[in-house]
Image (cartoon, rainbow, N blue to C red):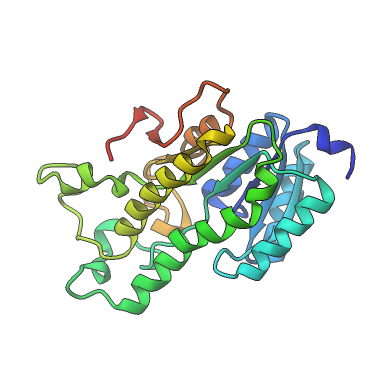
Amino acid sequence: MNASTARKVAMITGANKGIGRAIAGQLAEQGMTVLLGARDPRRGEEAAAALRAAGGDAHALRLDVTDPATAQEAARWIEERFGRLDVLVNNAGITGSGQVAPQDAHDQVPSAAGLDMVRAVFETNVFGVITVTNAVLPLLRRSPAARIVNVSSHAGSLTLAGAPDGPFAALPPSAAYTPSKTALNALTVQYANELRKDGILVNAAAPGYVDTDSNNHTGHLTPAQGAAVVVRLATLGPDGPTAGFFSAEGPLPW
């Protein structure tokens, strides 16, 4: 262990670009040591180097959330270097439709969606969260005030998605991305229920429609704006909520 163990330690998956990188940057600005999980080690190190150049304490970790071996290796590295983990942000996710705007994702219409694509989305967006969370949970239990934030989407709200005149009424129905975020919300509640007695707060965050590669940069919010709600939930005090679903404006309906 080194002197930086006095800082809180946060790991963010999918952190080499977009919302994940913005989350890492904002947590670093608050004085945390940030661990940037990335499938591509080179891109992860480039992002970490940029944060270090800006004065942050940042380190890259090779982490593919669909590969349990990399999650276990990341957990071992964190244990050896820091002995604990204070914040986990499960940010890594895929749309399944490539770099297209939601209104163009017609390949996800339930009656026509390919099962391989649906499985791939759930593998990252849901099973990957379980893989990473369980790998580092022993380290989170060593923190006096651990926080887990799962990056979800407004689309994961059954209430919003099911409203005939709601915000998603004009978009093609989805058998992959949207249900994966609904499942992630349900998973968030179950982890929160299990870990409540340990003082670990677990919440889901909806960043909003952010300008990222995943939507071919059609979003109207910046990554920094989208990251703000995630960072707020990652830094909750002891009386903060758990088992909740939040946007920048406040609680969202399930």
